[in-house]
Figure 1: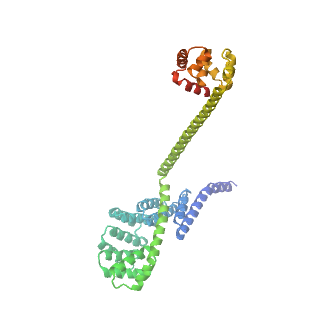
Figure 2: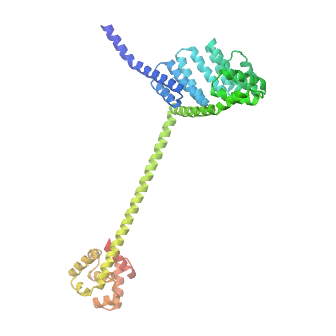
Figure 3: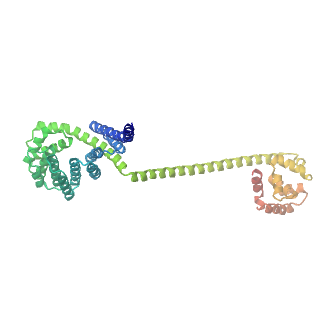
Amino acid sequence: MKAACKIILFLLFLAPLYGRASDARSYYEEGKALREKGEQVAAMRAFIRAIHCETENEALLGRIYSNMANMCRQADDHETAFEVYKLSAEHFAKSYDSLTYAYALNNMAWEQAVMGHKPQALALIDSAVTCYPYLPLTQKVVETKAAACFFTQEYDSVLYYTSSSHGSDYLLMLRAQAFSFLQMDDSASRYAKELLPRTRNPFYLDDLYYILTHNDATADKETLLRLASNRADVQKQIKERHGQLALAVNLLQQDLNPEKQRWTIWFILLIMCGLALLSWLIFIAWQQHKLRAEKAKFERTRIQELNANKQLLLESEDIRQELVWNDYEALCREINKRFYNLATKLQDMGMNEQDIRMCILVLIGLSHKEIAEMLNCSPKSIGKLKDLTAKKLGVSGGQLQEKLLKTAIL
């Protein structure tokens, strides 16, 4: 019974690990299937999800990284391909599979060769051969050495490494190109014609067309026409595939560089916050402008109403009877009714009864002579009295009426 319980607990402990491994494998298989369909971006997403499953299957992780590196190679991003092949090699080393580890080293060497780093490429090749000095790796090593010589323009060495009569399509392609660069047209055409029936690789077909049209004056016209008719489609396929692969590699680079991605997100958030702040400031400025416009409109309306009331007072025949000068309370009631509590405001500003009378008469636009008649004094004394009243309000005599108008509408 105890043994059965231990087994059950052990299986329960392993279940989450198996689940993660199962998810990683399913994403890996999904990525491979999507690559075969030509859906490069979706395939890269599947591979990235597989990596994030945190499986402890080192061999599986090595294969996943190897597929991702192959996509980087096809997108001509050899620096990223080298780094991802390096990750693949690390996981294959942990899986204790010397053959897959040697292949990963050879792939790293090939990327160094393409980038023109021949010494580094040869050093990696030696490491691969030391790790697995057996037949399955031999042809890949020869291809990588030939590529290292080709990309450093050592075409005689390329011919040496591609001299085997049982070489791969890639070695045959390199041999044809080496003869072409050495201006040995007959040999270049010969190997191009030998490869033509064997390959459907769009990259090879494009190079074969160039070799046959530039190095073989006696090339079969029917063959050239067939190649030319397919060349536009081939180039279009290459361009479309390369575009998809470039997008897929960009996804991988973002995943491999989370620090850069985080800074990018922070930069975008900073821009959004800046735009939000700018929008808020514009909104506040617009609201203040709107309030100022409404206030100015309200003041204009009040001034128009005040002027209308003033005109009515001036046109009134019984103005002297309506404004009872000897009865201050009656005067205030009449003024309050007509001028929106102006008399009360003037009283709060320290004006006495005589000052308020003077202000009201100035406000309704009476002349010095008319004011003198109403107050029973001389026109000269009215001028002095007006200046004293204006001084109490902090303005000159000529500005008194405007000041009173503003005080009335505030």
